[in-house]
Amino acid sequence: MTDRKAQLAENLARVEERISSACAGAGRARDEVTLIVVTKTYPASDVRLLAELGVRHVAENRDQDAAPKAAACSDLPLSWHFVGQLQTNKVRSVAGYAHVVQSVDRPKLVTALSAAAVSADRELGCLVQIALDAESGERGTRGGAAPEQLAELADLVAGAPGLRIDGLMTVAPLSGHYAGREQAAFERLMELSSRMRVDHPAATMVSAGMSADLEQAVVAGATHVRVGTAVLGARPRLG
Ligand SMILES: *Cc1c(COP(=O)(O)O)cnc(C)c1O
Image 1 (cartoon, helix red, strand yellow):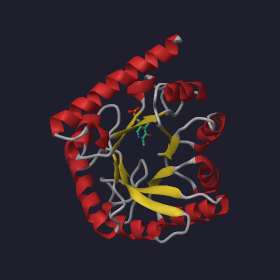
Image 2 (cartoon, rainbow, N blue to C red):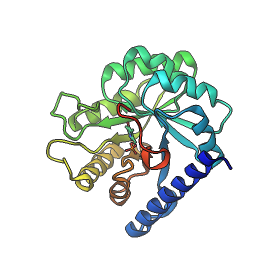
Image 3 (cartoon, helix red, strand yellow):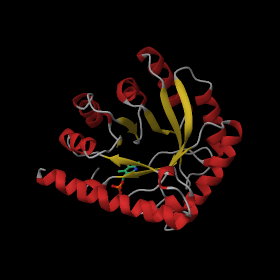
Image 4 (cartoon, rainbow, N blue to C red):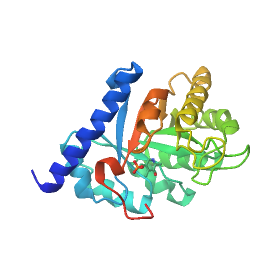
């Protein structure tokens, strides 16, 4: 094994141990939680090593980096998640490789994603990104719709050709009512998920938790955690 592969294997084992203990502590089965490794800023060679180590879900937040990486790794059995703020002029590219777009936060993006999915002849899974610190009608500083917009966005996605409504996603807010209260933030997300599933029973994905707060997300009930730093190492700033 190369040094890098051994290092990734060790980091993955440590993250796996954290997820397993959090599941055990919460009385959840380990297979209720899927690990998504956030590979942003890291090269395609790392994605390849991760795939060899058994990773099946990877996430990226910038199309400029993600598109060539996904192309270089198209032979690997990976699901690609897009988790960054998404401009409509990038949607056509993203629809060419993403399996799930986790950052759906406005009607205009739904329309653009739907058109791109149809013309690429692909079905795209969509998560509505919730900004728990956003006021009604506004978006969060890191993207995301205010909770009041969830029902409208979910209905729009569900009715859009080429798109599938899979659930919701959040990043624990750094400011506002939930700042420093990750557990409470993720519990709020779970309430929103329950409400959403009344109208969209198949939208069971709850994507929450990163390197620093994956335990809180697992305890709250997240089905997917998005882990970057703890697997790949600290990114240079601006990532
Ligand atoms: C970068 C990123 C992550 C991973 O963050 P880490 O702290 O490195 O684990 C998760 N979700 C989103 C949306 C991100 O942009």
